[in-house]
Image (cartoon, rainbow, N blue to C red; front, side, top):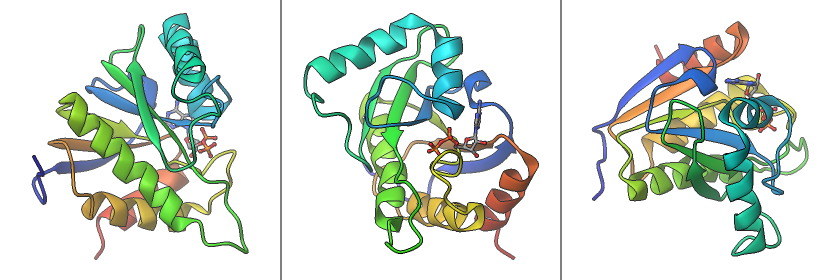
Length: 176
Ligand code: ADP
C-alpha cells in the first residue's frame, strides 16, 4: 500500500549502527562483502551473520554483485535493528550525471523496507564518503527522492555522522 505524504521524517546527527529502528540502510559496495565507512561499522558491530547472508546472496541471485541503485535486505545480526538494507550508491562523477542512480538508492531501499513491513528506517548519507559525492548536492537528491518515493514507511530518519553533513541534510529537508 502506498503511503504518500504520511511519513514522519527526521534528520539527526549520530551513528547509524546505534539506531533502534526496524531497518537501517547500508551504503554498501557491489560486492556486498564489506568495505569501510558505514559498511565496515555495520559488519563490525552486527557480527558475522550479516556477512554470511551477503555471501549467500552472492552465491544466488546476485552472482555478479548488487547493481548500483538497487537494494537488498539481510537480517541485522547483533544490531538493534531487525534488518539491514544494503544499497550501492554511485561513485560521484563530475562529468556524468549519476543523480538518478543516487535517488534510486533511496527509493529502492524504501520499497524493500515497505515490502518487509518495516515501520521505521534509518538512512546514512549514501555516496558522500568514499564515493565522494558533494554533500549539499547529495542531501538535495536524498530529500527529493524520499519526498517523491511511491512506497514509504511511517518513520524515516536521516542519520548523519559529522556536523557538516548533518547541517547540509538539515537544510535540504527543512528548506526556508
Ligand atoms: P559511500 O561509499 O557510499 O560514500 P561511506 O560509508 O564511505 O559510503 O560514507 C557515507 C557517509 O556515511 C559519509 O558521510 C560518512 O561520514 C558516513 N558514516 C560513516 N560511518 C557512519 C556511521 N557509523 N553512521 C552514520 N554515518 C556514517
